Image 1: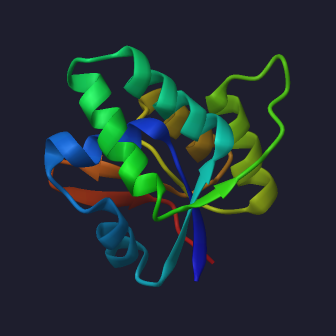
Image 2 (image 1 turned 180 degrees about the vertical axis):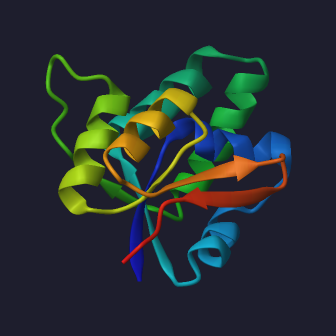
Length: 132
């Protein structure tokens, strides 16, 4: 089983793309996955769901239902860190892949040799890098 950290935009993509991201993660990684959501990511989704009644709010609410199937992990966020910085630091420390569609975060993860899973062509997942 492999741990994988899920980013908020990756979770939100499942609604408007109509894909089952948890099932597809297992397919692309070719093994059982332990989907991890860091508490700051969860809080970010809750905030968007609360304040936004548009498409983003609906996507965040749907993402929160996916989070219920994930493992929530408390990781201390430093004052000078963004949520992306926290994901990067945690993935590096745990030596585990990250699922994100954020181009900037993907680039930063790849520079450190951290495998990245992302949505490709709006219907399937792809991975940059490999898992030991």
